[in-house]
Image (cartoon, rainbow, N blue to C red; front, side, top):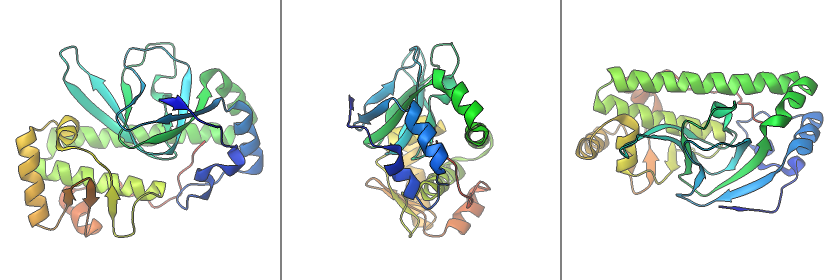
Length: 247
């Protein structure tokens, strides 16, 4: 992980993303005033460790990250994924040590802020404060859906649901292809860590979903030929077409 030359907020690539709501000139100026820099993160690198202290918050400018909880014996649970426009570190924005780590699935570029600057941000731009609450609420909804998968969906439904969710989130972030496919090198082991399945079960289930033309997930590419059909199969109701905020 390293620092990079800072991009001016007026040139932020998220401002041009079709599925993200652009900031007003006044909001851009405020974000520039509190921006502390940028970080480049290679695939597999850790943004921050579970149990660490830190005052940083990050907006994902490029790349995809995963939020991971590790047990004392080394077992891991992938809790969520973060796409361009998502805010990283909000989940631990108080004084307690971080309850999870964040790792890069794709090489990522992150915009860095510090927690201490956010009260001023919210006072000067209440709309941005509302957007932060909106992003936190949406993540809670996604985690609720994930809990439902772990508790109630069978293996085929879990993986189909995850595939639809990832393609949908990538579309909402402007990084998915028009054919409902996404280049994302998630391994079968990581799928197992996210969905509470064995590696063998993941492999067999992916083969079945491919044979049924519901999900084609291989070689670092996730494709959902028919989003409506696969959404119905997985009982996925979270598809979002509205513009997403970012800061």
